[in-house]
Length: 53
Image 1 (cartoon, rainbow, N blue to C red):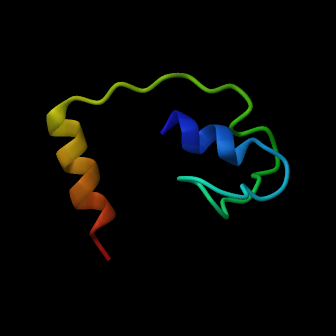
Image 2 (cartoon, rainbow, N blue to C red):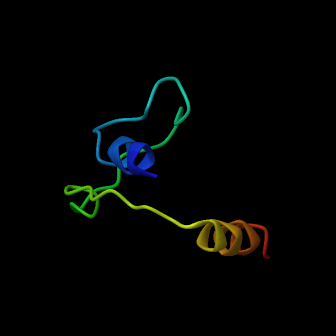
């Protein structure tokens, strides 16, 4: 997730790689990136949430 946040904090559109086409988010929301460590249970909740409509 840190890489995604870094891509969101880079001016323009990410040209290639895992985060290709991710656009810059204005406003400084991702200016300071803190590492996030998720446990297995938290990852499963995140996966289920991402699949929800």
